Image 1 (cartoon, rainbow, N blue to C red):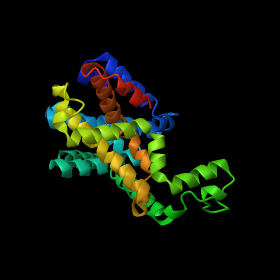
Image 2: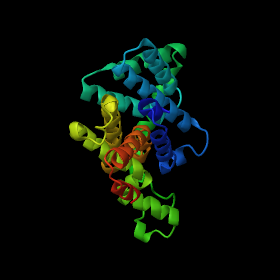
Image 3: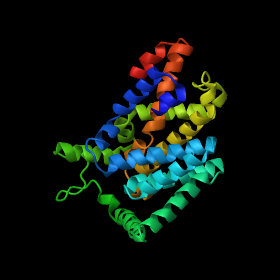
Image 4: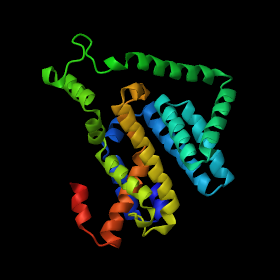
Length: 274
């Protein structure tokens, strides 16, 4: 829907939806209706509204961003945590504290409408982070055998966990390969905005830049929490990629169609499939 609204092209929108649907972590996270599914939906609505408001400051967009963010705070810890980290990073990079302001107002509203109960929710979420910080070194350990290397582990599931522990960046790419492709395209878009893959869509330049920033920031968080041990308590790196699936699907789909149609370069299809 977002891609269709922005491009007015049903083919690009359908391709973006296909990319989103076949992303492994998206399938896993939404295999059943739970708080993660709701959190992901509210996260996308909240940050999209904030982005659109930063471009076109209509009061209705601001209100929708506040409502979505407030609902998100009650839905799921990882989604709320990711929204805070993303809002902080974008606010600093753009030197625009609109995103943090929206989240701050939503926090005040959450405390008010819950009669102060949200303070307990937030305290519990922070306690979870403190707990994982203490036990993070044993995250993939077996209850009896402890943390064995993959080469010495006979249990198939445990050997996979050991491999992830030894090569976290590989697991990050393998779990969301299309988001990894979108990450590289987003870097190109940010570094070479005048010669990006989206130059044939001048009306999308600003929104594409913000989507690229969204994707690069969350993928960077994924790499940091996967590779750097002091930050691993902040969550599995691949979980951050779930919240980057929307901008990644948009960037990849528009880029592929641009190279295939506008630049008449069918070789990109072969490279993309590979």
